[in-house]
Image (cartoon, rainbow, N blue to C red):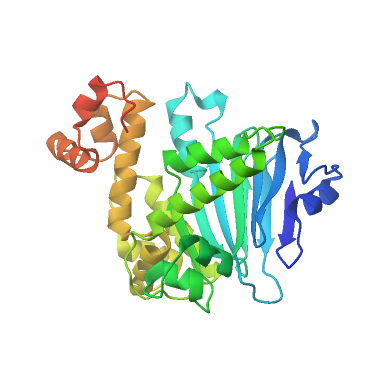
Length: 332
């Protein structure tokens, strides 16, 4: 199941999707028919130049969503919030659940709509997927950004080249995305609530982006992005082994210098720091959801010295892994 589209002035995603799959559209929304799955897609115009499209469904087939490059540049910015739930069948199979999270990790992407992107939704997985399309002028007004900005924010608001940034979907963003996807449309104040939650998503994302370094940003293209995701996948494939920069650069067909610079620009951290952060997040998953012991978790993540593992975990989370296992495991 594939849906390809181009974002141009006047484009209506819900209408176009409905026409492609022969689904009726009512009040800017549609219900996924039983032969495809269950769920809905809804479009909300928060204000002129600021639209929110919400997807909440579980589909019977794998689904590829492909946004193609428009023939002309656009001032529209695309912000994608993608949160996928672990399938029920995996909840008691910790290895399958862990592999699913690595392959289908939730994320946020912000990009120029001139840049082609692709999203994959596996079958039989509950998806919360939100897309904000906002003009630079409206976004600048929302953020009240002054003239003294740099780094990603300057590129997003004032740059003249294509850009792409990736952020992890933290629990707070995932919570808001679920809330906005489940708003009762019959509520007389639903439009107000949509507006509040859409702005909250903007705030949570840009609060993270403002924490990035103010280094000069380089233009990117889809080929660069695809290569960087190959590198990211390789890093996540085995968290027990630290990344080898030369091998990763060779795998991606990039110079090591370019790889390091673009990786930090897109993912917000150096390759090694990104690896360590992901390693600690996997430690939390193994302790909290898979119910591994501290020693099993440490050895699985490549720590031959459990004291080192405990110190690193405490540095990240302010609590030792042993104390975490003795807590209710809801603090992280």
